[in-house]
Length: 291
Image (cartoon, rainbow, N blue to C red):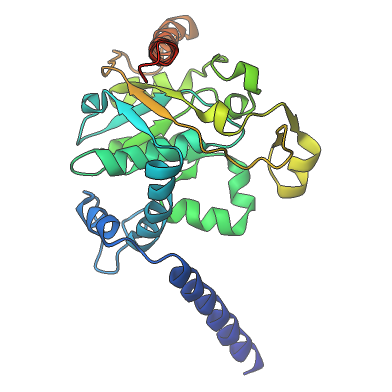
């Protein structure tokens, strides 16, 4: 009886916290309407087979929508090149200490496409060690970066978001923000195996939002992350800079995904080169004062 009472009390406390959170951030009815238009097989309780929740999506996009529209004032170029249905892989560059670029890319797919789509990313494994983040990550479709998870999503004709630079990308320092580190080969093998088109994405602004001058692995251990970015103003809070997303034409690669490394690396380099070109296009426009 005592155990049951304790559980009931804990459940009530958790429910009360959720109600307070939702009272602080009421869901935008326009966001809720767009969530209803996402072409995922939600059941009558608002969950899809992966555990993605309509309620959590509405809450997430209500919050991210503010940052997308008003804080980072994101501009998209070439978004009409992104397929509005069927399997597709978005492959972009990383920078900025935290995955702000990933969050804005997810939001662009929801806000700009018609009908809206949910871009699902492969979260870093350390997220699983953070209870609150782990729950929200899974409820909004961002799963641990395991190959079998990614393959299953594509086989189900979903939109997969990939940053081949991984944590090395977000670890770039401010003066490295427009560079690219080596891309892994796994995403091309996966695209070949599942016959998935790759849409390259060049992202600008993440490195300015959090201008990292160093990364602290020691602080990272305290929060269960690989590192914590250090900025000139110490706290790594994002600055209200303009961000830009540039989308290239879909790229297709023939193969089974079992080819030798040399053959796959050639395809990887072609994607990396296209991402770099999209970034360069954006920088050229910025320097010309047209962005």
